[in-house]
Amino acid sequence: MRDVNKVILIGRLGKDPDIVNFESGTKKASFPLATGESYVDRNGNRVEQTEWHNIVLWRRLAEIAEQYMRKGDPIYLEGKLKTRSYDDRDGNKRYITEIEALNISMLSSKSESQGSASGQYQNNTATPSNNPTPSSTPPSTPAKPEAPSFDDDLPF
Image (cartoon, rainbow, N blue to C red; front, side, top):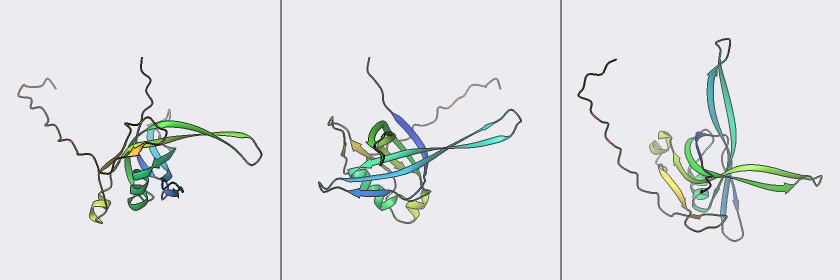
């Protein structure tokens, strides 16, 4: 059996991406992403709930984030969960779980109207490394399938 580590999110950036340039030339972007859901409680009141996710992008995706992504922008992303550890100031080991984005799509029509990049971008994950190698061009968008036509009378 094969293991699966896949995350799919649609949400909004909680702040402008933080960019780190490493001496090796590798670029990293990180930002919080908010996803929301709502439900009706026992009293019939609608309750809105926001979940915050730590997002990390590497190389080409980080460059795209730096150039085009801003606080409040809606995005779609596919990625994987990664947990890392570090020692805090008191020497205690701390853990943080992040989502390493492998594909992103900017959903804002605002980006199109302002002349910035819009569309889908992905990292190439063909090499088994901790940091994916980015794709230099956005993938082609598949054609939308046509809706089936129903000539029969439906019973509702």
